[in-house]
Length: 417
Ligand SMILES: Cc1cc2nc3c(=O)[nH]c(=O)nc-3n(C[C@H](O)[C@H](O)[C@H](O)COP(=O)(O)O)c2cc1C
Image: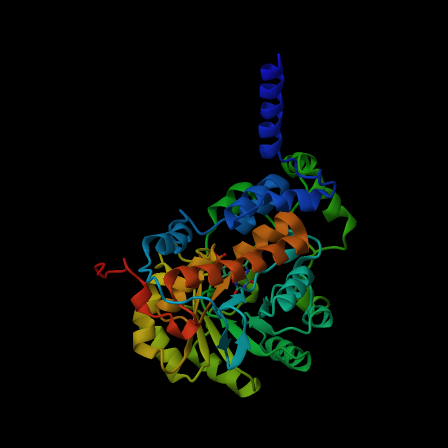
């Protein structure tokens, strides 16, 4: 009998030593975010929360989405060449972009219509970026204005311009950005005309979303998003409200809006013109060839973002990571290179920097986080990037960003040695 009691006692002890119940989390946002350990998890949660049309607008790419996939696949293809026994007791992932320090080589990309994902939209992302000390790029097609974003963020802010047919309007926006302390102008050059996004066409997606029978049903099965959406003020292109050129308050397809408002005659002359009206650094976003990278360097811009708009414009355009090494070789000493598109992990940032980029830009990573958990989601994903970059550097045997070189890359057209 005593032996039996002893066995039961030991059994209970063993079970107790492995049992671990997390405290029940009552806050639904915290509960959702606790389940997300990667950008892929945040995407899955956002997909469940957002109406399908909204999720597809954010997640989708042009045509067959080959470039969208290629951007991320390029990071998967590149392997590391880790060195060991190198004393990585202290790792510093800090660097500089446009001559100013930042804690990791990352800039938040501009995304139009951010409030469609979460009512706080651009304000939430700008605040989170400021807390993480990372530059935030506000889109011309932002749903919060240049001034509203400046009011909530003292952090580094860049302003992305699309060139409207009316240059006076562009000049006016640039002046507003300068007055509000935006540090750099980012001219997006891959949008001469709007890319064809099959997912949006299939759903007849308009901005703001039109409420039809299907969207009504979609809204009903995503009550969290719908409740937030109907309680918030109307979503518009906040930078052009009241200018008489359409501010998105009437449902329009984004393609129709862009094709009617943006100037397809945009050329290198306009880059010169921007130079004449903007005193600060200029970044050209959407460079996709070594030839254009050379022209950009000749034009004297401070930085280029190798970008295909996250695979949303010309399908089968090259993966941006594949451009980094050849562009760095051609112009790396004359212009800063930012690699944009497909970044889902801190190790992706490390790969791009090792191949010659000064930093990466990321868009969907923070949008998924915003859709999954609002501003707290963006905080979480930016923190995760920082931790990831640090850990990746340590596992590579590298202490500083300046020590990141093609030497840490194994399988990128180089045999392992
Ligand atoms: C929903 C969405 C909206 C975007 N809006 C803009 C925009 O207004 N201006 C711009 O230059 N790029 C825009 N982009 C492109 C991003 O700036 C960036 O190039 C792209 O998201 C990078 O790819 P990633 O999402 O894989 O990081 C948008 C991207 C997404 C996903």
